[in-house]
Length: 206
Image 1 (cartoon, rainbow, N blue to C red):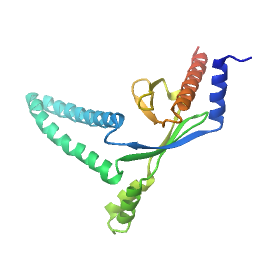
Image 2: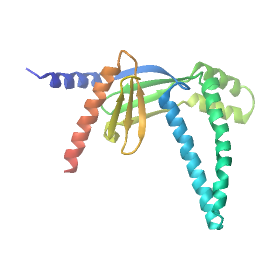
Image 3: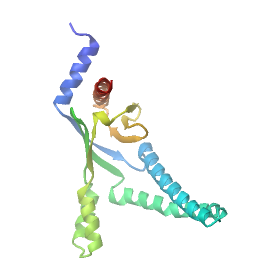
Image 4: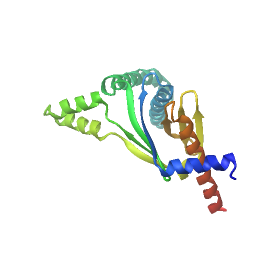
């Protein structure tokens, strides 16, 4: 007779073979994870710009000017944050529609085009402007990708928000947004698959 742990692993393996998939609509401006990721991205871009500017002033032997650039940089970042917020509201309708799927190879995701995005894309495509048509193509293309189990080094579970953060060695690569009905199931599959591939990778490198 199999132990409860063996039964759990067997159930997870069966679920993976059956291709577990779901769709979810994630709020944007009220989502702490997306806000954190967006602010971190803007902060990294600002830090990179500041470092480049400081290096330029240092080569010119005027390092004090880099400090004078800080207020200017802060003012320059505000419009970027405002544009992100406007895009989230107008283009995305304050929702991120995405489809997740899990199988034996890894985690797959595909961004679903929002209704407003489809309307804006149609209007832009028929506007006759090359720039607008380019934007329409971007809106229609969406975003999709795959994260293999062997590339996941760490998993962080946020049961209160039903979110699972998948990380490589130094950053979050993908966040799985689940719903109330499948969070426990998805978390169990992720734990089992990441642990199994980590053990296999460890055996291969010995």
